[in-house]
Length: 396
Ligand code: PLP
Image 1 (tube, rainbow, N blue to C red):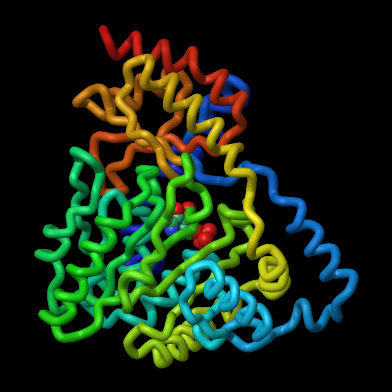
Image 2 (cartoon, rainbow, N blue to C red):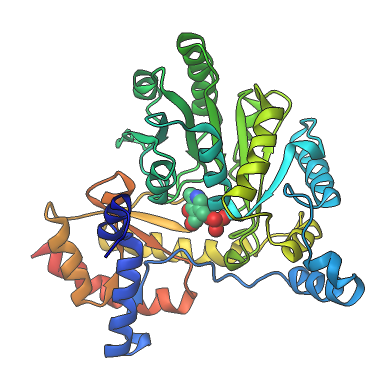
């Protein structure tokens, strides 16, 4: 077949998440859906807030269809950009203007646009393990190289000294995902301040800007009153990337935005480039109806209590059984350490109990599993006997 050579690795490596999801589907057909405990996919299940439906209906009933469904400026509707800028200004006390906002097709669309704008062949992007596996593809599409900073496994904090050592002249950007997929960690203000300090010094050393891409689709999903520091307030070259996929449980609608504030070096030029990249990559513009919908839902979010209940139940029960898990602080993922050296063997044992979890090797963290707890509470309850049986097997 005449596929591009560069596509082959993507075919081979087809995401561990998808593989496990497909396995879950196969097992559900064989054993019945209720007898399979599938923790593979991060597909939001918290109810979509009623404001979303109300906005859709009202827009469809009250606005000119050509206005709702037509092309607009590639960066998005002016009034939507204006509202987002005002929202950011109010919330984070930074002077965003509408010209600094670009609507994009979710965080994935925004990341691709940014990589297209920033990378020449062999340029490097740094990210911290564990990381969202798709970053590999987003960087390699534009012939860049993703360099991964290992995590400090003792407390899952950012290894800033190591990141410093890995920054080179070719480093154009750093991606920071907070709250983190797959660890559920929320990075703290002190370490983020230290990261900012390190990046400022690294910029001096390499002699060009190092953009910090703040990938924050889980910003609103945090527990126990945790605060996610707003990086653009701490580091001048921060590019804020937000998505409504998880906040409003609407990942299929593909809507998010980029904010490139006044402090960002060459920010205006970058914004112009991003607008063109969005068009030429074929996104053209972010989905029109949903630009308008989110502009009416900027203060709305799903019931975070929905995920919190799941989180508490799963974490408490699994740790009481004896599994070693990282206390989840944000997003909807729980990280479990493999109780056996033989991670694959452990995974097989879990599958025998019909438990589907994703090994985190592909996230840059071997020896762990990601459990996505965005499933109904009752499914978590009914999975517990299977986990107990699994623990019994592990012990022997
Ligand atoms: N970044 C991270 C860390 C994610 O976990 C995801 C999706 O799960 C994305 C980006 C892409 O999200 P979106 O649906 O907004 O494209």
